[in-house]
Image (cartoon, rainbow, N blue to C red; front, top):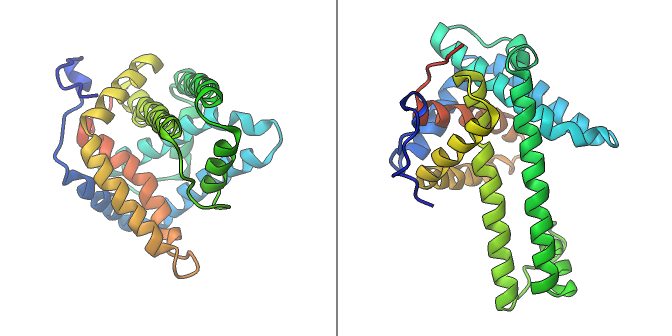
Length: 253
């Protein structure tokens, strides 16, 4: 999935960065967090409370993928304003998506929902053809931590590989999309297309960052998970710092 030969508008051309930038993004996120730590704790806590609160409400939880892009865009806006204007992030920044680019951000959420539904429907169909009901139950048990990792035959391994590819595809079209909408004034489809290009041009530093964050999460969860109070907002800010490096942080209003 190397898209280095595809050229787009130079104003939003994603650049390829070295693998070591995966750590740089995390370090930048830590620096941003500690500069205004309590404000970021507040914004990220409110964001998580809203998202998890929606999930707990029957039927209303279906709106979570639509609300999430607006809140992710709000974090990106707050981070950009904090860095460019040298000011502390403020709670109203989190809700900029309710005033600016609202329709486009909702469209990103709807397209992500539709795409996820299609991917899951295709995977469900393939699963019936390639994997036995017993293997599906074993895979589900392993995912939820209720059973060991099952031994799969060739068709089962292929199915798991297709599942991973499907999830990576959905993540790639969404990863940078809210930031591109709020900071670069792109339409939903274009933002998701460019997000896809940026993700796969930088799959190596993203993999490095993912491994580091996973190791940090394991360590942070040891002392009664208290370390996650610090790591969660840093992980949320990481979503902005890698965007800023890959695209350059110059918003267009």
